[in-house]
Image (cartoon, rainbow, N blue to C red; front, side):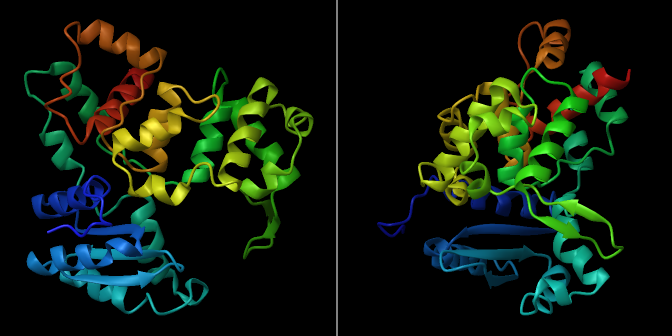
Length: 302
């Protein structure tokens, strides 16, 4: 039975992770959530005999690792140590496996493709190595705001400019200098003119408004991680300058909401040419974003 302060809608993400693990799509899951859900999550995992380990993140959040016993045993050896003391092998397990979504068996998604759909079958075969990266949410929000009516070269330059102007200068282990992506606090203190000088153009006002909303608490990045795809998408659409495509891109690449299906000009053309009755959303519910990436890559490379 749910306790009064537990929102079952917010737990759909957690329950979907359990479903994917039990189906064999994932070997291990790292789920970051509010501490108020800890008791519910632990009880659910115990009832289904799924190994897990908990790592505190801060006063409000926890990292919940669960999955195959051998994966959890490896994580259990590391979560009590500072990240800067991890060996290269441990760093790979702790960070890069999650970043590249390496614990997910993407062949399961390809096997879901209707064999009678020759177009998507070909797209899946060509894009069989594609993985949806689990990237930083804040970076994705700003990057996709900048991406509107822009090309990759200019987007990259804009991000370099704001990082150099408002980010912290760092030095890598090899001695190379670089600038970290600017925080919301740093961008919130900027002026629109300063952001325009970074070649953001009209997008400067979108970036400034979003940074200030994050700083003032008008939108919570942590809460977005706990939301369902539909709820997170609705919240993102409330940001100045965020339309449906940008919201879906942020959901897919910043929140790892695999049901998000961004539609740009290339995808629209592909849908019009091959799915005149509409894309079969019901068949691919929960992994539509993966199918979108197969289509996008196929159109790019064919």
